[in-house]
Image (cartoon, rainbow, N blue to C red; front, side):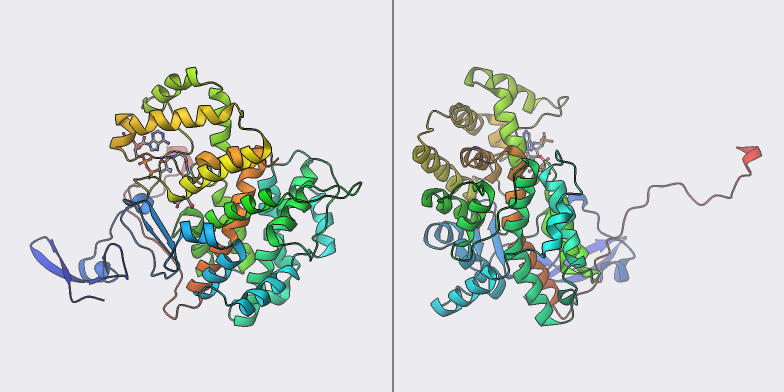
Length: 429
Ligand code: SDX
């Protein structure tokens, strides 16, 4: 809290509101008494100027293009750490010691299997179901299998539910993929690290041995780190709002997955690759740039723009580097979409329309090319985003539940409907 005060004058009367400062970043004006004091609400559709909570997890500086998790830069975490270490950091606030990391890794490893009845749950979906539809359904159904970790008032049950979701998401994601291609489920192996285990469950078949390429495992792990958490984005805000009613953690994460699926949010990686495929060649880029600027055309450059970043998304820079590493490892530097992506990026970064609006590539712009190179179909891209973001959702949910001032979220509105009127008998309508 600072001793700064914000003064609002309304109908000739002045009202004062306290200003709260964080560790870094913009101050906030605490308007929680505004309605009681003035009889007015604030109106901020899309929450462009509204902070919904205090948080210690993640900080984004949109102007500088910086992203911190518990104070550590995404660049350092992606380069020097691994995904489970980032999970520990987000959950508990500090990087783990060697012993803490080993214990955490063991706990997660021994929660990777699903209740065997869940394998039959998948068969209720049509073969051509979108893997995100399967993921929403299966994660929501976890609360029907794991009743012993749904009491949100029990810290032990909250922790078990957290470990279960972080551990089981790779298995659920891999099985959703296997089901969609008609191959048998591959069970996790406890002697593999988190990302290698996931890649093996996705790409191994019972008919032969499967060795995970360590370059791919490292790339997958880095992609998970880049997607782990991102302040109060749409899906995280969905998880917090669902959790504020006391809903069980599995239901809250399923709500987050549903929200992430939208093409304006996590669905953008799938949409960005489809867009690059539709553009197809460098000579067609001007046509699409013109469409992106045309207010009468709903087309937008998928993978560009961000509510917070008005500079390059730092994750996109790391993603771009990872794309080149994976394509070189695969000998696929001739991927026809790469020159289209790079030329589109170059043109957009020079174009006044994009520069004036602070529209830069975001994490979804390059991730699709990398994931496709790793062997994933576009329908799996948002599933992978959800897999990685689960630790962010869980950590944000945990922070909210443990907040002694936590209460149900319940926004108000500006009513624009009809004024009060009397019922009219049907004969008079
Ligand atoms: C993610 O919030 C997060 O942190 C999300 C995320 C995370 O990790 O959780 O970072 C993940 O969702 C990344 C974003 C992925 N989405 C896309 O790539 C879809 C394409 N981008 C846009 O739909 C858009 O940029 C948003 C949704 C990302 C942001 O929308 P805003 O903040 O509401 O911005 P806006 O729509 O008000 O746009 C401002 C202006 C408008 O033009 P004007 O009215 O000022 O003339 O920029 C234009 C928009 O038309 N614009 C674009 C554009 N994005 C914005 N024009 C063309 N192409 C685009 N991609």
